[in-house]
Structures are given as structure tokens and as C-alpha cells.
Length: 125
Image (cartoon, helix red, strand yellow):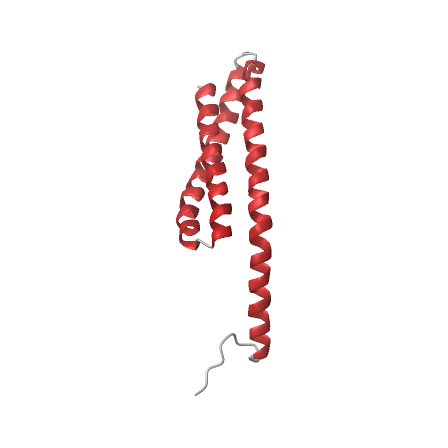
């Protein structure tokens, strides 16, 4: 059961990693529709990842309480951790691209708001 959970986790991590790589390409190409469509899928994957992580912890704890030497799962879990590290780095790369763009938009909006006396759009009646 532990092996199955670890493999499911690896699969989800790979899907998230691939999705982030696609996000990076889409940000560079300004393909916003693709980004938005993928976000819902990524949220579902992250939710599943969280649940499976809890399941893995429960399964490992259960096996340990039964007296099973859980070090037999060390290689699989180390591989999973390495994949999670790659996912983290890819996400950091995406953030380094997206956050400056977000800040630029914020500055533009703040400037427009300041020019219009606190309103983004000036309505003339």
C-alpha cells in the first residue's frame, strides 16, 4: 500500500511539474487563457497531493507501530522528496517571472488611481 501511495504522489508531482513548465512558457508567450484553464486542474492536484501525503504518513505510522522496518521505503521516499524539490524550484522560477509582472501592474494601477483622485476610473457625469 505504501508503494502505491508513493507512486501516486510521484505521478501528481510530475503532473504539477509539467504544468508549471507549461505555465512558464505560457507566461512568456502571454497565453493567459491556458494559464487560467490549468489553474483549476493544479488546485485539484494540490488538494489530492495533500491528502495522499497524509495517507502516506498514516500508512508509515501504522507499519511502524506493527514493527515493520520502514527503512525499506527509504529509496522511494527519497525519490519523492527529490521530485518535490524539483517542483519547488520550478515553482520558484515561475514566481520569479510572474511577481515582477504583478508588481508592474500594481504600480500602473496605483499611478492611475492617484491621478484620478483615488478612483481607478474617472466618471464624468
